Amino acid sequence: MSHRKHNFTRETYVKIDHTNISNNSNVLQVLALAILVVATVALPDSPPTYSYSAPAPSYAPAKYDFNYAVNDQPSGNDFGHEEARDGDNTQGSYYVLLPDGRLQRVTYNVNGDSGYVADVTYEGEARYPTPKASYGPPQPSYKPPTPSYA
Image (tube, rainbow, N blue to C red):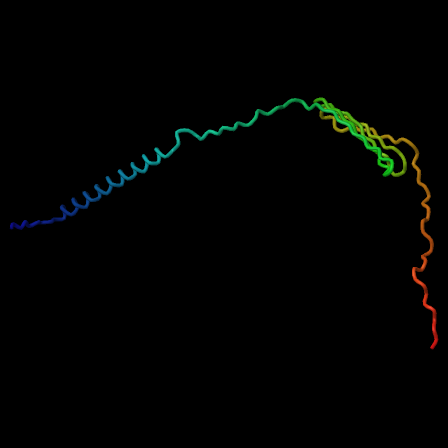
């Protein structure tokens, strides 16, 4: 059995240290490259697509008309409203029977950015009937006791 004797000098240690550092550096480079490859493979080729597409907005000018009226004699309710619109031009009217017996009618129009222009009229004369007293002095609801002396 032969024994070899190693003479380690400072240069040898330095050389060994550089070799280890170089080997560690190669390992880190290979590891970084592997991480980069995995990350690249994991990325999708294109963004996900969805089967639903939002409807295209419709910007047609507004066009409508409506009306309604209520005339209920037992309750005294009498009111109504009508309106028509074509694009930026709106016109209409509404009315209501007021508690004083007059009919208030509002006719209005809006043309573009001109704002709400109203004409308010009243039909009939205001009546304020004198309220009738529907009560009298309070009446006792019990019979007063008969005094008794013992």
